[in-house]
Every structure is written in C-alpha cells, then in structure tokens.
Length: 54
Image (cartoon, rainbow, N blue to C red; front, side, top):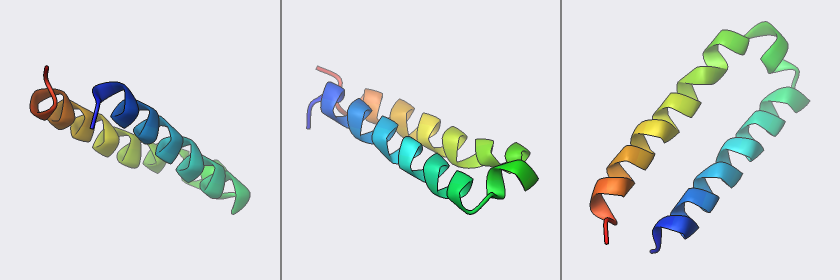
C-alpha cells in the first residue's frame, strides 16, 4: 500500500468517526475524549511511516 493511499484512508476514517460522534451529539459532551482516537491514528500513522518507507 502506498503511503499516500494510507494517509487518505486514515483521514477519511477520522472524518467518518468525528461525523458519527457529532451525529449522536457526543462531541459536545465528550469533546476532550475525541482526541483519543485521533491520537491513536497519529501513532498508527507513525508506524505506517516506518513500515511503508520507500
């Protein structure tokens, strides 16, 4: 998998997750906890950077 494809996939997954949280009005109550999945994706991206390095 190319790095650009992986980055695009992660961005789309984060956007979908935040849209779902917003739809259920969970972002208003738990906005501080919304950073947890974003940080998880950040570290997943760091791992992918090392693994898919060309």
